[in-house]
Image (tube, rainbow over all chains, first blue to last red; front, side, top):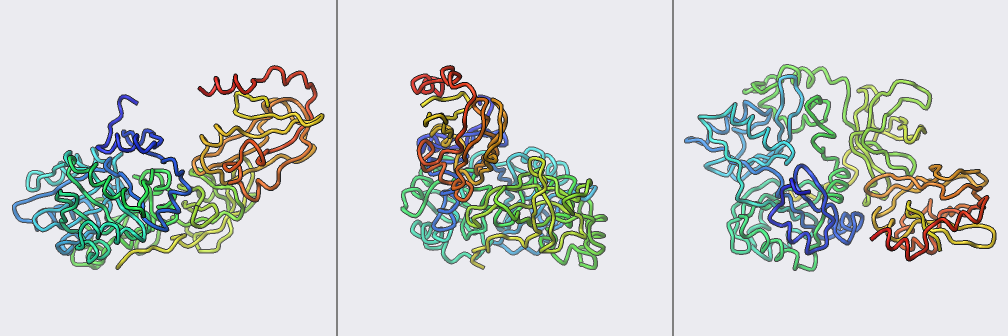
Length: 374
Length: 119
């Protein structure tokens, strides 16, 4: 694994006996001795600490902050100009054919925008932003900060021990907060469906902060394995699986993240790559839809499982894009794409697993209700 | 006990062998969430894929260790797959089989050889 990069917490993961695996060019902990199942359940019951330092942290800055906001709106279908200071939004880069190039979080931090993108896409995202936004906006990929996520119902109590200000933050608030002696950029958000925080911390302080958090009896380190089952139960997309360059936000069920002002009839309608297709689909509907899938039996239906309308049909009507066992649900859970006509909750379908057609029903997402503090 | 390179253990009980997976294999698999067992009475050949075992991470197969006939399967594992992680080399056997040639057992690893095999 010599070509792989390491996060500033690599030594800590090894000291915690994590099983390290290659992920998006990094050596990352897939699980700790506790194991995926218990880590998942612990995060839902108390608090879990995740190292997400492999993700890309980017600053967009212009002489006038409004310039940077207006410029980012050229690349994403979200309302950036209307995002208040100290607030964050979920968004996605689209391409000219209306597909999703990556999903992201962006925050208005007063004199600049702070953007967090997926590890596997960060170089491409930075290149895309440089090409479209420079020179009026400077695009800076930060190499001097780590990113931690503290997630779970006890995350507030744990982090408030370090600084009481974090308890006053609402879901998707962002603030600069001193933690473990360092200037941290904290947002009340995450990707588990639980309440919690994402914390951008200077490299030099990352290990100290992680150790202070792990010293709390409610906190356990959580690996990528449980991160995946947590986000799947929460109905959240994994880029490259549940959404990709060929899936539109309408197919992906992400229109909730396209604010009214950017939709047809809005004041700043369109103006992002693929707007023609995306706005058309928002009115006329898409041919296929991302749905939750609840297998009837115990067999997990994993990524790539073909879906059929009946036990006999030869032609698949869709496929699973994420699937596995949901520890909180206590049963297999999955997400995938199906023909729009078969996307209604409760529709009975069949997934082909090891040559057998097994029943699976279209299910409401999320599988586990979100615990956000709104 | 005898061991295979596929991380199965075999224990002779009268004229049958009891088969399960080793503690090492269970640990590598992680939390087991699904098990599909063969039908009792099935005739199997060495290396046939006869058990499906899925963990939180991935699906894998368990191969028939030798030629023979499945005489009994451990249905309790189907109901509670997690038992494999709790007691892989004891209560959580997968199936019992009558093997055609008991002397074939001699070709398998003993415990010392298996320990060396997994390093």
